[in-house]
Length: 105
Image (cartoon, rainbow, N blue to C red):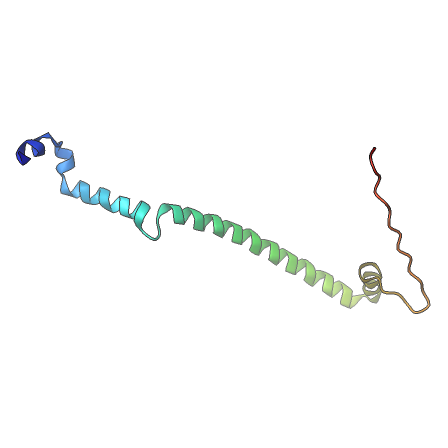
């Protein structure tokens, strides 16, 4: 009975090296901790982290340049304080004008 079933199986599928190789590939591609899906996700995350790193490095360089500019020029420091932080001298008054958005009818 088993002999009849064994004779119906093609000889390619009886090759133990081929079966071992296929089992190894299935294990590595789908079952292993470092399978293809997790590798894809990690590469995608790595790309995002690299973009984020580049953004923060560029931001740090821009901030360093602005800091050196502000420390070197007192007029620039005063301008930044007035515009960004609404600072004023004791003898000055500040008026803030807020424009209303146009309403569409």
